[in-house]
Length: 102
Image (cartoon, rainbow, N blue to C red; front, side, top):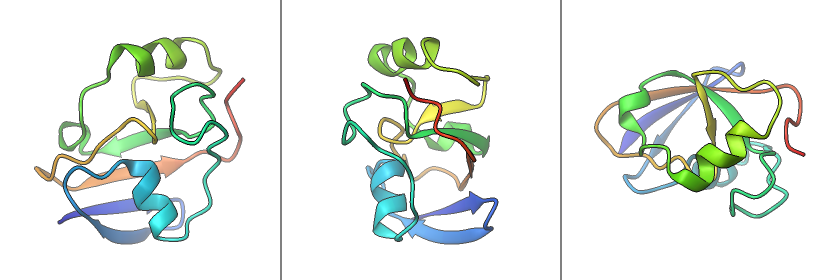
């Protein structure tokens, strides 16, 4: 289990290795948009990784292509449906106050 801290709430949850950020957030009853049900097609689950980027899976081609097409992307951007916890270090994410998907 790895610690995931969700900002701006500051809530901390324990997440099993191999779990996507989207699944972890929904399992903790944290509201996050996910229009395409985790298929990396809409970009609505766009989040920022504040700390622990190495504790998440690498960005795959499909996720990278979707991030290139949405507004407000930075070097900290990930799609919660595609980022998987590796269990190697704690991760701190920031939920965005807007839906950035198309």
